[in-house]
Image (cartoon, rainbow, N blue to C red; front, side, top):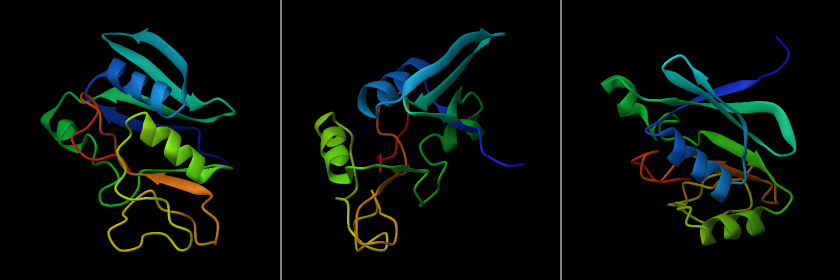
Length: 142
């Protein structure tokens, strides 16, 4: 193995998740096709098609219990950015709920659970824990 290509994400509803990821986070729909009784939906960042998020509707009670909690108490994703504060402000203005503001330095600080940063002095990554949109999750984003 030499790289990660696909990350699966359980959601309550394809279309709500697609709207959130595209309109608020800046992802693009890479694929959206019928797949038997399901849909095959993958999302990726515009400048990085190497890794995609595959959306899967949670149907069983076990899967439904995991929606929005797939990273546990840790961030599910960490996104690289050239403008951490700018991206944070842009997403916040679009209604993305964070559990704190970006912090420079070594990750979580006090009640600022996310977005977190890499252990350096500049905020270069936004670590995002879970979605907060109806149909996607019951837990806070960030």
